[in-house]
Length: 278
Ligand SMILES: NC(=O)c1ccc[n+]([C@@H]2O[C@H](COP(=O)([O-])OP(=O)(O)OC[C@H]3O[C@@H](n4cnc5c(N)ncnc54)[C@H](OP(=O)(O)O)[C@@H]3O)[C@@H](O)[C@H]2O)c1
Figure 1 (tube, rainbow, N blue to C red):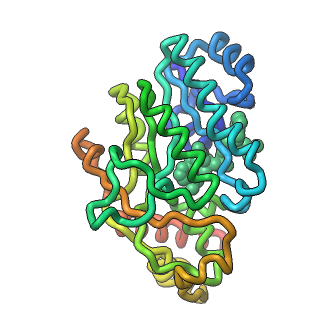
Figure 2: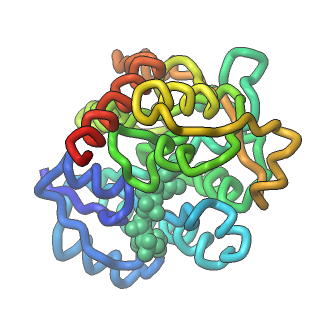
């Protein structure tokens, strides 16, 4: 299978390269319709993966001050890919975010059919608007949340939280990347389309994650609880805290491991790496 990957140097893109080692990953702007058309015509892929997007550095607050760049990457680019792939009848995959929801939907979690209800950040608004268009077409949209793995990559949730002095104690759905990529491979293999919530069953709070981090990785790590009411003291844009429903994925026969055991595996991998380095 010939795979063309956009955003191949990012956190998700690098893992997609591991999943599809033969993938071609050109460094072109996905909002540049001529460059996208040339890449598709040159490589004639069976599968296009869009792992490009602006998530902001150091975090999504960046998007509040860089709205044009954020729209270009999170809305215009995917629409260019939609047009170019549709014309050529190429199957393609887009990365969405669960950060379009707030809350746990009365304990049920949000399903793929639920309309976004979180508009507290520009980043989340761009992701929600893009999904609302793409969902009308035969595109596979994989929604993930707060991704983490057993690496110390700056984008892994565990690394991010370990740098914060204060962390929230609010339950959230999360995505363990090894499980995400095994689910993505299965959905892609059977050419599924539409939105899928790809999160591990169960919920965790950032505070609990840091408790586990202290227990398994760094006993000297210190942190405090951040109350939701105090969040504006440390961030500019609002933050989504939400629970996603995973029934649609399970109905495909795809079950991710419970999120607590994913966290324990990630922490023990990080701890092993640290011992080797020390
Ligand atoms: N990480 C998360 O927490 C998370 C959660 C849910 C969903 N997602 C989604 O997953 C996707 C990938 O995120 P990520 O975490 O891998 O982000 P990332 O590490 O920032 O990687 C994104 C990559 O896309 C590139 N890019 C940005 N705009 C582009 C454009 N117009 N054309 C071509 N390449 C462009 C970036 O290059 P530059 O660095 O040069 O801009 C970067 O290499 C995004 O759609 C994001 O919304 C991420």
